[in-house]
Image 1: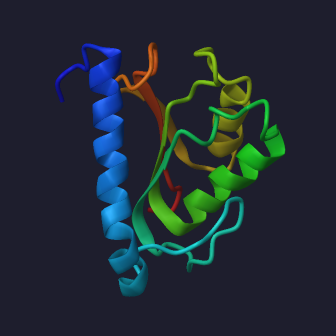
Image 2 (image 1 turned 60 degrees about the vertical axis):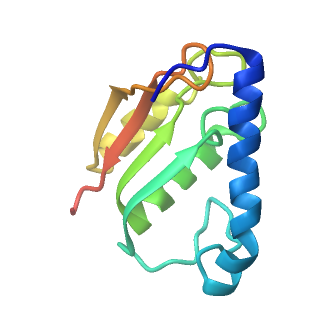
Length: 138
């Protein structure tokens, strides 16, 4: 992916992504590709997915969503998917989330393989890592 070089370009990229989603949403909803669900409880069977992605929710909203919500949500994502990726591990404002270390420790205690990996994508300044979790039994 090429770097976004200006605020104007960023706006165009975001608008194009939003328009693509909105154009697909009605058909996707009818086909069952989109459904309403909310963390920390998901309506899927255990191990139903190979990969779960969580982008710009967990960790980002550390002031709005407490540590208990983060832990329950991460465990739920691990329940439904063999691998979970969370991007970015930053709170609003760009600092590491205060819940990251405790979440990593909690996940490792639960037996999961946890790492923080660099990514070749920086949507916001300093957001170039993701939390990667591989479920204990996969």
